[in-house]
Amino acid sequence: MDHSPGFLQLVAKTKQRIRETTPEEVRRRQDAGERFHLVDVREDGEWRQGRARGAIHLGKGIIERDIEQVIPDRGADIVLYCGGGFRSALAADALQQMGYRNIRSMDGGWRRWAELGYPVERD
Image (cartoon, rainbow, N blue to C red; front, side, top):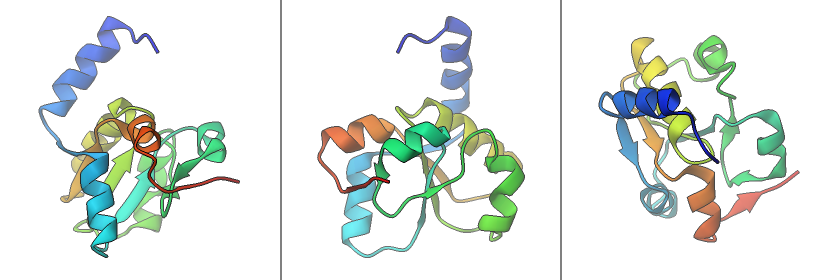
């Protein structure tokens, strides 16, 4: 997907303020039995086509509105992902501004997860 220069600039600045992780690290943590929230921030249609096993869905359009009901603990360990890592970075920044302290964006997102053949769920 081609992204506009303004969007790419926004994401680049945002990534300086957040922490990122990789699909490989997320999978390692799952295999180790670590407890954390894996949150898919993609659109509803993307979610229905497939998602990382164990993920919950809070789309980018509603995550700020609904996060406090779904994950009220601002110290909770949360990993966000989207298609490639841009929208999840923006969402991570917003959640940090809301007081969430242990947020990471999964760089490479769903595309990298699927490329690696990691477990997925589908409707």
